[in-house]
Amino acid sequence: MERIKRLIPWIRKRSTVNKSIYKAKSLIIGRKKGGSEDFKPCFFAFFDVNNPHQKNLVPKEIKEFEGIHKIVIEGMQVNYLLPGNDLVINNLERVEIIQDGEHIHVRGKQTRQ
Image (cartoon, rainbow, N blue to C red; front, side):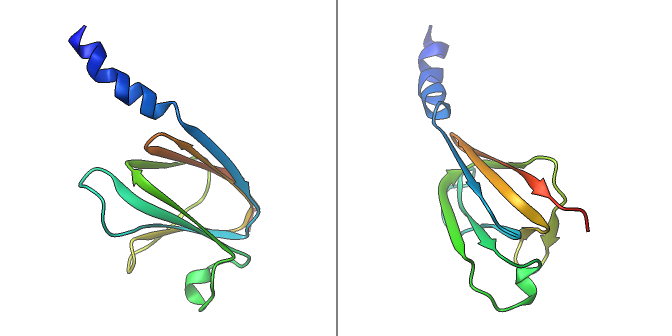
């Protein structure tokens, strides 16, 4: 019984699901400073061009999340940028961001290039 009482806040927290769909050509996923050891704030920056890190561009939209433990990227080709520890996803038609408690799932449709 004690174990179930400890799990109830976790179950309640996981039941929050937010889903958003964005039209963008590329996406940068980055971790912000702050947060705890296991839970960090992160951001998603949407662009209308591929490889926005090579150009000095402002994103068309930024989505920020607090207290995230894990980001799961499903079925897409991803590039890792060593200097900033960011991820870049190019050749997008659309991208779907689903927040399920402290986890974020990223799905989308990429064109082949």
